[in-house]
Length: 552
Image 1 (cartoon, rainbow, N blue to C red):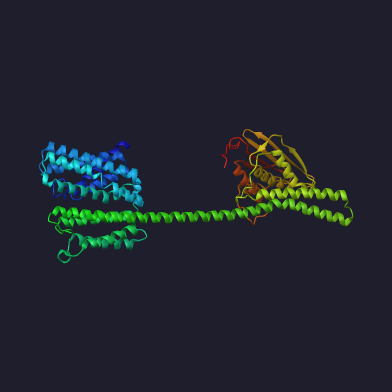
Image 2 (image 1 turned 30 degrees about the horizontal axis):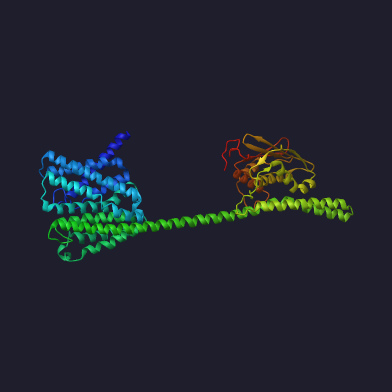
């Protein structure tokens, strides 16, 4: 099915080549096969650029067919007509392949119309050297096989070269846009302007080709009427609109010249067509440069807008991170400061009753000093130098048992205030990849267990190595967490500054767990209590949890 579809497409493009070739050969005057306007050169180059070199058979078949028909039509013997058609078809195919190769190699390929540098390179290489292949082969073969007069070779070669070069300039880009689906309709958003441009072009083409009112405008400088309209098309409707306008002008002006309304008078009629093609080629050069400059300006504008949007999103993210960091600091400091405050209140009460002795005061102040030092370390870890939400992760890996002890020291006063016992089951040798991040997560989970444990309860903290992961579990004897609230907390939905007490710390802990490439889960225990399980990749292990989820 695919081969059949490819064959149909090849045949279809060959038929298009034959059609535009037959129309172009109707402009031949200096010699039967030397058209003054040669659209197929641009069509063939654009076809190979847009569809690939695999479509060269369409160019060869189309060129052979149209040349064979014109050769037979002028009365050449069939064998001579066929041989001449084969030679010219080979030259036309070589011209198209070479032009497409040079554009792909040096002028951005299909995108040459949208780069000023690409257009300039296209203008310097595409219409200059490749047409010589077709000119030399075609003129030489015609001269040897048919017998063109030597004094007419220059006129034939010049006409052939100008027609091919102008065809490449005018019709290559239009074909690429059409066949690569890069043509955007200029009408949406500017329909009235598009209509005004088309009407103005029609009036200018009428003046240029003289279909009506020829006696009144024959002496007018009509060629100058076209240039501003093409610049208008390039500025407002891009390369597609500009090239379509040039193609329309080429068709109208060529038709007028063939009908006797000569835009550029000359003693020889064929030269009038050559002069017209040179004029249209110059217009195409100016229009292509203008449209490329406009396309680059629009691209730069779009890139600047994207950068502004990206910077705006970055600022919004930084503001959100600042708010989150403030909530994080407030959450982490609340429980230890509450313990210090409760301890001070208890000291004041004991002092008022006269029950405070020097040893009790000394030990209590020592614990408060330890707690304050732990809080200062925590604050330093929370404020990252680069403004990231994550706690600072600088420094070597640390023992998990040491991290848990530091957390318990920071919460020593709340533990004493609630008469809570801690049971540790953490083997030696478990090291963490990012101690500050792990410490923050454990601090949040342990703080949650302290706040929800009943007086004289127990908090159990255990750890183990499972494959490439370390698993830490923290359980308490509190009332547990309602299932719907637990699901909302662990999903990370609804984090906001106004949701104090709604699980903000656990949401942040879950976010940090994602950064580590780990997993934080929770479940209620029977008959009472809740258990949080925190797993993360061990140092040197694969960045993947034991549940198979890739690290963030």
